[in-house]
Amino acid sequence: MKALFSIFNINLVIILFLLLNLPYKAEANKALTAKKTSLAKKYFKQKQCAKVIAVLNNHINQLDSIWLKKMAYCFKRTNNLQQEKNIYKHLVGKNPKDYFSHFALARLYQKENVKKASQSELTNLAIKHLRLSIKIKATFLPPYNALSKILKKQNNYYDLQNLSENFLKMSKNNKKALANLCLSYFKQDYIEESIIWCKKAIKYNKTSPLPALFVYLSINLEKKKQGSGEKLLFYTGRKFPKSLLVAETLANKYYKENNHNLSSRYYAKVIRFKSKNLNTLEQAIWSFFAVKKYNLGLVALKQLCSLNKREGVHIAKTAISKLETSQEKKWLSPYKVSLAKNCY
Image (cartoon, rainbow, N blue to C red):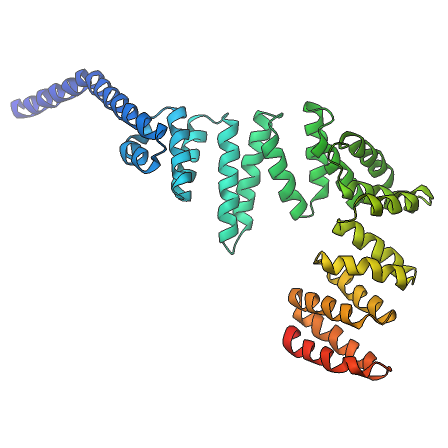
């Protein structure tokens, strides 16, 4: 019994000793951290990130938000994506309302996304943190822009529409949000709404006009059987002579009208600007055939094969068949060579 009482007393003394020493230990840690950050500050000013990391890496849990962000910057400078990500995870865990850290973490998930085959999980994590950043600070533009790009890539125009409408409530007449509403309504085939938002987007993007806004507006006006749509499209062609989208729109329009003299003129621009649209490139080939510009047809075929060899083989064989029954047999050899060299 006495032995048990002695053990109890010893344990009690140890606990009391530890409790009494906790404040001293905390003060000692605080002093050490202050000493380390003072040294790191000198290295940070000299842009010696490797030395900043060496000094502070074992004291991350004692660092405040400012120094944590400096550490994240240094990990970025030294190409240590994983450690940079860990810092921002630590920051949002420490302060869930840190809108910048949510945004930075989302961008890191996106960077990691590019390097991995399975992307959906990382994309979802990026979207989650971008939405949190926007929710915390609705007027902070970078996460809105980043999330908009993801939604466009996913062809998720309904969510893009909702995101942009909510963003406009906080940032009135924001140029990018207006342009995204023009696009999202156009892609969902809401003609009236698209016309309204495209006109508004054009109005507020006067200093840096976007060809797409004029194209979407002209197409919607044509859908409403308004003659102003065709006039606007011609005006757009003159205003944006170096726009691939404008060239494709005009080329495809004339192709549908069987006006191959004009369509081939715009398809020549399309192949010069290197379109990645398979349907457009196929139509370009047949338009060039119609006006006997077989040399340009070869260029279009080569570009198409570089994007989709299987589709390219089919179109090349069709082109060869057409040449075999025409008076232009001198082009048979170049097309057969292109089939073998570029499409297989």
